[in-house]
Length: 193
Image (cartoon, rainbow, N blue to C red; front, side):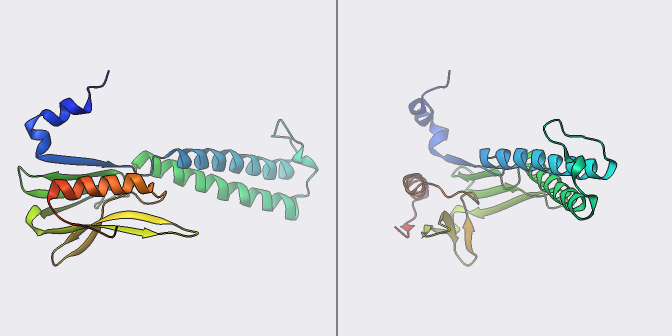
């Protein structure tokens, strides 16, 4: 059973450290699209192979009646494309691309923004700034066909660092609550509302 939030806030160290988790690519929508792409790609590839070998490899259809050129080749191409997209989605979820945390520690006087990237020498993306260099928290809102709702950390002389996840926009109430909580904790103004 999880401890109540109020008990966590009563600890003295919880008043000095604020840590916000950032959801990366391990979202339900990515799991759904990876499964659909993999299954669809496998079906198309098996249909293309069935038309070439004249052996039915699908239990629910008979693609042996397809003419290999051009129908079988097209099915095989779509199958390879679907499987490649599915593999890509499974890999970015396994690596949790974009996942990480934002940590603001008054004990050490540092703000840390950490994200996971693609494998390689730069897989760990970690930005660290002194708390006294933090200027404000900015809320960016763009409505319309492709809405964008995100929080940015404005740093003196260095520009802005995004603090929210990429992709699916947060609800307005969550965005306002996170921004207000962070601005209150850091003692900086909240801009953009």
